[in-house]
Length: 306
Image 1: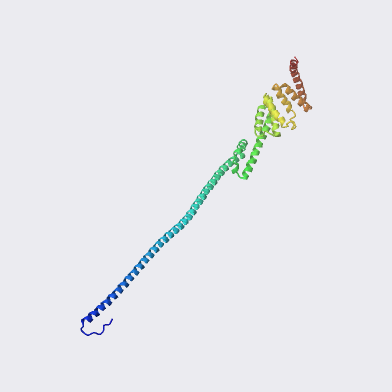
Image 2: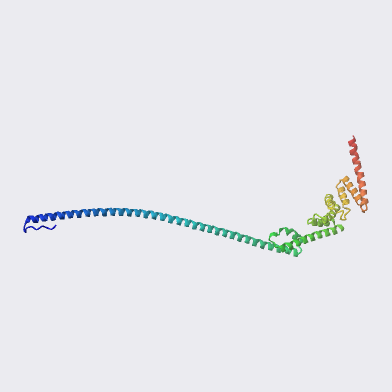
């Protein structure tokens, strides 16, 4: 406020002017103070809001960090489990392949060992065949490991075994037959039994049993002779040319004391081979046995009547 024109040197006027100026300054000071207070309050509110926002951002950041950490940890766990599972499967597969390889190697080693042993056994058996050890070759044929022999080895050994068997049978049969014809019944029995050990059925076996039965009968082994002759007859040796087999069977039965059975066999032989040189002797023996057995049956009949 501009001072009005006053007379120079009036103190009251100057004092009044100073008072008004002080009032104006005081008013201006109050306004400045009030503005400063309002500004301070605004700044305080701003700072408080900013702090709240900072705390909210911090909380959100922490939560986001936790969520990110959890998600990342879960992903890493899933990845780890997946990778670990794959590694475990790879390990199990490798272990299985290793065990399979070991089993296969052991199988191959066992097969090789068996094949080597079978080869050695086959060579030893081949030597038996080539050196003519027929009996041992036939005996040891069953010991061969057929599963580890080649098809050629099996065929050769089967043929060798069959041939050795046939040679043993032929040798025993022919030697026994020659011995029987020469009257050497003990040798005939031994050789024929040796041959029958390798062939106990069939037409040739029936022939051997016939000659064996006759030889046994001539050495007084009537029971054994009867057994062999019965088997020979069951093998149709009569039809094969040994028509007198039943005659010798009757003789063996007679030697055992079964006279009535012997008589029936003599009669059967005489009726079936009426033209045979022994037929007449069979009839005579049958008649003699009938006379021997008739009194016995007569006594039994008499006893029954009383």
